[in-house]
Length: 555
Image (cartoon, rainbow, N blue to C red; front, side, top):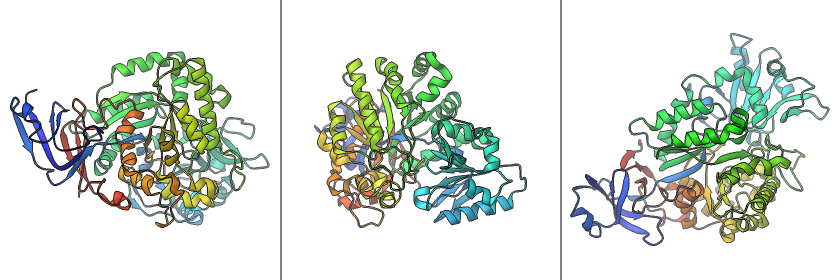
């Protein structure tokens, strides 16, 4: 090494249990040379030219936070659309206020139709939330707005598209269509719903050029990189590679990470249904080719299966007694009875499987599948990961541990949605016990916390995720939801650092501050171990250090 930079700090929380606290960290060539104090690292400093950087001497440093389940590029598809969601949002037209309920959404869509200059051009909107805004939309409601101008409305969690009759006609779906995810009224008539990835893809074809505008993906990655800096995040994983285009998505990410100073490492996790659809039996050759292109800032990892719907859109799969109002939810594109055979080639190839399961019925299926995979070919250190793990039971947590599985959990719903879904969708018991982290911790399951940003109504903010996990305070800022499922501050912070790295099979490179690892850190104003647990979300993030280079957050 030619030169060392030493960052000093009031305190450094290393997440290395053997050496948990330090006051200085030495880096060179983007990696960690030594962690300790200026005194302890003198054997290095006597031998190698060095600089002492005291910029953060009054601050606290931690390993850079990791969000192991995001969709940053896909967020760009929505920025140019008309927004009809329940919370304030940023769009290409500037800040947009949230719409409180369905009546306000219908009024907004009516305004858009009345302002349309071309009746043949669809009105395209995004952000609807049936849980927060008073129930689902449907074809008849949208026809009442207009039976001439095509209307296309996507949920905030993009698991459902709602259309009116003119838009429905453009999809080439007829009353005789039997495709998976095409919604119908009780009398069998098409209701304008397109549910889950296959059906949403059908609904998207007529508006594809407006959704996937030139340059939208790269612009989104650049925009979301700033969000990451403000929240101390240095690594993310995209859990939907291939939803739009394997080639274009890779090219946008490759261009972004190679821009000077781009402050994120990114992992691309391919979606099996798209892999099979595009490459068939050649998909493993394609993955090998893309693995060869990986760098320490952009890499291919694992494979993703989507096996049921969305928590906020209320399309997940539940065991008895089911939904409050008789909804059914929906499975993913791959029939559950085919799941073992579909996953088996990846399992045998040693490719880590990430299995989306929001509802407890889907968790059962996922655990049954994992058990059968182990029967077919026993494996150690497979790191099979249940993604989301929103609604589950204590028995499922213990079985996941017994099978050697992991969980990547969205805890934000406990705060942002549990009170909503107590009376809308899932009922009080399941809403209260959403994200059973205490159960997982007691069972010995390694788990991470993720945001699914920005495909759900919630932030990408690991310290807020940790605050939710530790306190489980609902949206009324008062009610504690399932207090026995709370976890310790240390376990919550592990779940956004070293345990999140383990879930992504990157704990040898990131997640803790140890010699030889990548020099990725979060810069904090206060020590999250020393503030009151209820104040975790208030710890100010000042920026990040990625590969030894500091990125300060805008004030």
